[in-house]
Length: 454
Image (cartoon, rainbow, N blue to C red; front, side):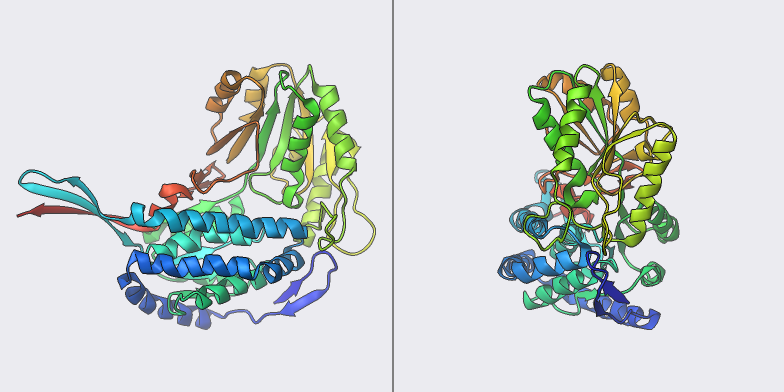
């Protein structure tokens, strides 16, 4: 398997794929190792994770450079991701013991009752390439703290980063029998699905997530799917600063080169401020620097995968063919690398793929609406249900729209953010299950009910 730098198209490294036999061997190893890991106390497990947390900071320069070279995100954003991952890990360090402790629910009377939390067993984690540290930590850390062992398959587009994660976990004291990495493409993920694992946790596309759900449903074990989105933003006519709202929308669209499941993928603007909003958005988009992601001044790097360039160009062409107008962008810069200009289109509607299919790139359509009701109807016109953002100075008005959203997350005057204190979950085609928050800690354990009569 070749690891290719998406900015230069050069081969960084070649990695040997795992085979079906090697995956089975690693499974047997972590199956056996899980029993001894589960016997350690939660406190001991947290202490190992604390060391891992410290190592991420100590080695952040090498980690950030590897991440940028491998997936193409601007270097500062790689540092941001590592820092964000450490924030999530700190949450698990600080709160896991509380939420994994035995709970006494009845302490008086003839029969006392409590709930204990036991590990699921061996966890399979098929992870994503767009935020390999962040989405990896959502699963790896609470799974290990919960007493599970982990078979971890990083995306083939983020394998080197995955190998760093494994190396640092071992350095922090996590036994090799508790954590194993399997490397390769989809066929290696398929090997994991064939194993009798005790839980499956996947981050990626709806199509693959649906396949995994169908494949493992009959095993009657927990599985969680963190999938994509077609996340809307609505700009109400009462915003105090249109340019500031346009800047926030632009960042929500293009951050991480637009490759975020919770990125803003479609924008609806009240007709009273539509013209100044799109003018400001386009002017600010023109100022973004596209180029070498290792350059500190670069704001837009390459897409991580070559086929995604053609996919986005196809969405743009479909929209233009159906009457959309490109205000800025829509082209591929000359030279090597999987680059595409940040692109904004108007005169868009829901007959266009751009407004209904997940884009996963720095491309967006902006649609005019006459009132809140039309905005709600359009925002709800989707098979996805991850996030929705509303910009307004009136919380009550914004709240009325947020309550209408069939999404796992809503934002008021912010977007494209995740907090470890809040559950991260999707609805409909955006997934099933929850990571982060105390619910994300308990996603990796079974409750056991104790009826105790003296």
